[in-house]
Amino acid sequence: MPAHDLTGRARTAHPDAVVVGAGVAGLTAAAALTAQGLDVQVLEATERVGGRMATRELDGFRLDHGGHLLNTAYPELGRRLDLDRLELRPLSPGVLVHSGGRTYRAGDPQLTPARQAATRGPLGTPLDKARLASALSRIAATPAHRLLARPETTAARALADRGLPARTVDGFLRPLLAALLADPALGTSSRVADLVLRSYALGRLCLPAAGIGAVPAQLAARLPEGTVRFGVEVTSVGTDGVETAAHGRVRARAVVVATDAATASTLVPGLRQPGFHPVTTYYHAAGSSPLGEAVLLLDAERGGVSHSLVLSDADPSYAADGRALIATTVLGRRAFDSGGPAGDEPAVRRRLAELYGTDTSGWEFLTVRHVSDAVVAMPPPHHFRRSVRLLAGLYVCGDHRDTGTVQGALVSGRRAATAVLKDLGLRAVPGVAEAAA
Image 1: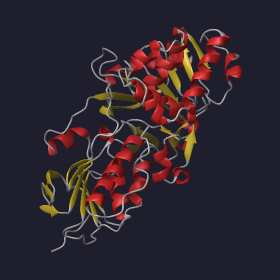
Image 2: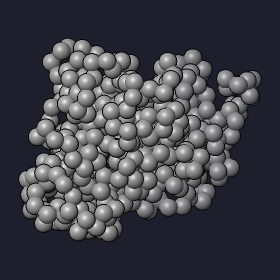
Image 3: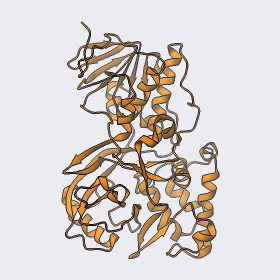
Image 4: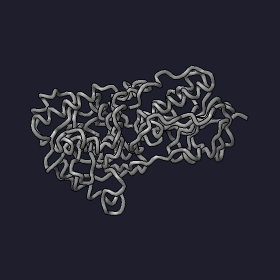
């Protein structure tokens, strides 16, 4: 008898390809394969798509699990997604930085060096500010392949070696890169950091109106009905199919493992297991916005908090009853000493009062989300193109094979699909040779 998915639609007993995992990489691979006429089944152990990219509602508030931001300069976003349908809400250009008890605006790549030199703030002399603006302009104009050819070290070492004043580094570049890389120590590869900084200078940070979960939801909606089967746990994989915990064996001509890195290494023993950067996000509701502007607020004083954002300033639908929704990110495994993320909330709240310059005692603490494997660690030397083809018939993809970004996950899924199609003698997916910044 044919298998059935949760909609009751009959499924082919033996599809051409099985994709294990309905995260962004797996959905991208499935879409590329189905576009070439292959019958594909995506087997997902949970009851939803997206993996670490998820959005949930809580009492009328829209809360993202993990990060919330996209960058419009990531080329794969435009290739794989309908950005108009995502209704991206851009943040204000540049960032706000809190340092030395002061909050100032910095790093607006849309301003000329002369205008940035005239801005207020303790980033050094007007010449220092002009040099920072010129540096951002240069990195925006540098092709990705040239950045990848630079000598590789850590991001922290590269910042120290490039001749920029300490006030510029500590007052803008270090807290910005720590926030974008989820790496407070900046042990990330300098090549990765350069690519991320280039994307910052070229594009705009933004968030989807419906939350970050709209990204995998859109990818899944493009698949033929019934392609994704929920509640199916895969226990082993091979070149000719997979075994499941409660749904028997599913045979296929190709198997793509598109799970998180830890699960992938369990299914494929010997597969590289990377490190991770944990991310903890605290959500508060306030009667009104402490800023009135959708702009990233960076804490340059290493006071436990990395950055904060009033999500409802970007889109009011993020918050209930006209209130403001504030998301605050803490990086690292133990930023405070109160015995767990929820126990650290009073310390976070006190720091937010300093960052926003307002009384936060009346803010409602909604919840905290801790993701221990939020962002793949990318120390030097970083391999930007780890093989996605393990054997003919067995493939692996995910941000752990490229870069720990949405861009990396999308490119990885596309590369895996291309490898499958090549082994099956079919046309490859266009664009694989392009950089995965």
